[in-house]
Length: 389
Length: 228
Ligand SMILES: Nc1ncnc2c1ncn2[C@@H]1O[C@H](COP(=O)(O)OP(=O)(O)O)[C@@H](O)[C@H]1O
Ligand SMILES: [Mg+2]
Image 1 (spheres, protein in one colour):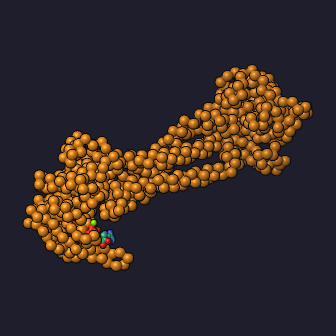
Image 2 (tube, chains in turn brown, cyan):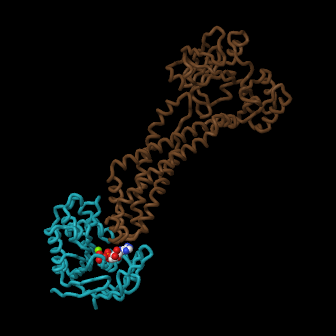
Image 3 (cartoon, rainbow over the protein chains, first blue to last red):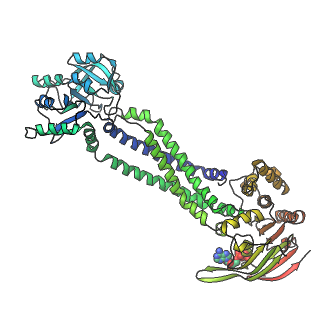
């Protein structure tokens, strides 16, 4: 063990340099945590997906609608417990920047198929009764200061009202999801409301069903059920593709591009940058301490001990910056999650993310310190002492 | 038997493909309790000789037997331990650690001993008082004058009670008054505490403080003057 005062005091000797390097480490580690947390948020839906739910979509693309008549037919397939229609509404509240998802669905089936949706204010029964009733996620309700009983006018973008007015919803209940595959920002409303408006010409937009959410019977083999459904419509008029909920969610993640790869590339770049910053600081520190290295060796301190003095400086510096960055990530979790809110639900700084960040920090501390340490270790006493002239 | 015996010691340096024989078959005996001043022109190999005797560098050939041990045959870690136990160094440029206080600098060699924390502190205080700097314990080297720095360095060299003190131009960077203080201390170490001292110097007045002056030229020993 090298004298610990030497480790700290040499680090703190150049205060500005220490503070700047530590801050850049902190910011970089913070960014790493944020990036990783975004990936976690993206994948949260995939991880939490239910095993007894299948999604039936057009084989062509998610944006091609399916005939209404498919619902009853899918319901007849062996192993299917229940089928729910599900349409992306694509509206907004007051301004297009107020983004959150809205879905039209068969409201009476929602509760059974999605037990993770828990009403925390108002009542399920109230949501089921009237056509304009809607179920709103807690995050969205909080964001716009809405309460049960409030009216919630939504401007239809994909489904505009022919007279240019808004779609009027009444908030019957507010929910919170117990699992990550359903976020707390969504508005659910009656499929019938949409269907009737389109039929009467009150509104316009694509006809047909976006996707069918299928609940399989207990004990049913998902793979077989999926191939049965796909076989049923193989001859048209519209071929379908069934997927598990997990695959369906994963498809969204990959729609934004290969996000994990993208994020790891950015993360990798950030890591290289902080490694270079730490390395630069350590090389300067090592050069300044060359004479100390010679003195310690002359006094009889071992080569390894003297090398460790520099390695420990690097580790101490990187840990200081890293822990600061990690603290920032943890401290900013709430506000970040609020800020990303309805656009990017599920932001969470997991233990795994923190552990990864900590390992990265230790790794960088080691890499930045090992070169100077080995050099100090192998340097002869007289070479080190001569450096000073 | 002499405390230090050098036999046919050869040290060469290669620089730019040229081999320079800095010490050429050097024989030298130094007695325990002696105070030797090593004099000679610049480049004659004085520092090299001192470094070999102190185990900071290795000879190419020959024997260096100190207190019965051939240090030329020791391996690196063994040699480091030997240095810690037997030798105290005083350098021309003081070579204190800038981030440590005077007290901490003096305590440094004691970290390699089995002494407890409080014993280390006590020993270091005693050493600092001996060099007249008991009231400068908490000063950093940058807050001390050159003469004071060198006295702290002497305290560091003697704190572990080595038998041998090696000083390479210890007064080279000092004014006359500070130099005299340092020389008085070295003399005290020799006379009062029986330390064997080998001091490289250019300064005739400094050399006069020693008991013996060894002259050196071009890697070979010249005359030896016995003063006292
Ligand atoms: N590490 C080294 N590499 C090459 N030459 C060296 C080295 N150290 C010393 N020398 C050379 O050896 C000679 C003796 O050096 P030194 O022992 O320092 O002399 P002195 O201390 O008597 O002035 C000089 O010519 C010097 O240039
Ligand atoms: Mg010299």
